[in-house]
Image (tube, rainbow, N blue to C red):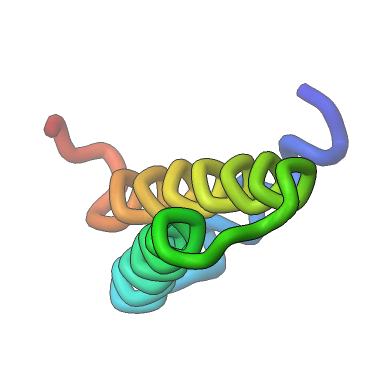
Length: 76
């Protein structure tokens, strides 16, 4: 595994379940707010693409954070 992958895994293991849940929920909300921004504020097209990609990335990371919260080794 790459060095980046190891660092991400170590950081993920250092977080508590509560931190993962709160952080994941916050990232999903921020991503949703960015999507709402796209719906209601007229922006230049390249900026729309950038905000859209950022919002999707934030929501994906938030979902993964929520998915990895919990006791390790437990069947889901």
